[in-house]
Amino acid sequence: MIKFYPLLLALALASCAHKGAGRAAETAAAGETVAAVHVPDFQADSAYRFVDEQVAFGPRVPNTPAHKACGDFLAATLKRFGAQVYVQQMTLTAYNGTKLDCRNIIGSYKPAARKRVLLFAHWDSRPYADNDSDPKEQRKPIDGADDGASGVGVLLEMARLMDKQAPDVGVDILFTDAEDYGVPSFSSQRDDDNSWCLGTQFWARNPHTPNYHAQYGILLDMVGAKNATFYKEYTSQAQAPSLVEKIWDTARNLGYGNFFIDADGGSIVDDHLYVISGRGIPCVDIINYAPDNKRGFADYWHTHADNMQIISRETLKAVGQTLLNVIYKER
Image: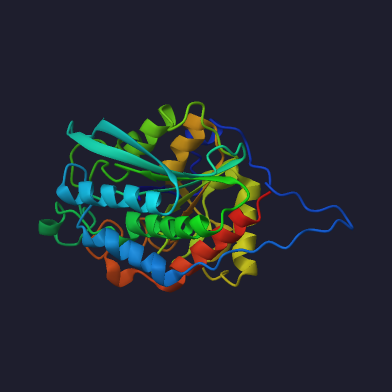
């Protein structure tokens, strides 16, 4: 994950896309019989293994063997779980001019369905621990267990379940690359929001299918840490207010209100901004937000403490089960 702004700072991008996202399933008319929906049971142990498998490759930094091996694993796993897989090979340019060999990896379920939902997370990890307290450690890459791998792990578990029982709507799972290769804090170069989310910027200009559109998108970023708290992110509320309420209401009704906090969060520069502005798809960013931390995120953010020791099955379960209930109740 990248940068946080206080709530009162409105992002210019927030006005670029269509306002709001309607509820995909309208409330049934009085007296109308609504068929019961079977929602799969999200398996936290399975999601945890998917996170661990990614971390075991090593830091997933573009141009490294670990990055290539993990990308192969993700594409093969989506295919094994019955998705129609698209791989976007691309060469991206980092803030410092480095050419990055990257891949966006997409798995589609019910690719012919017109009504679609986009679920996405970045699969790369930060090449720098630039928030680490030890300056000698700041130029080394991080494991990114939460910042990257957790969102991917949740979505892989959802893919496994969708292979067994497909939802009524089409679902596209998008793993974006080079999200976390932005300007580091130790650089003398001016930070630029557009130095982040490079893979998503590419996808927004070049979607995996022509004229791609979805009813809405849900971004997962840092969704696996112990005691995580997900506040209602500013741009998400501006662009998809009814979807924000649906997700947070669903979580509360499932007993996960201690994770999904019914309060405003800050503005986050993240992948969802480019999906909103580039594709006109209203999106919600589910991200661990720490209002009492001056950076807006937990102390492990962009440090070597972002490893498997902070990953919680309980948090993965809260996020995954909430999303399954939202998706499987779409009509």
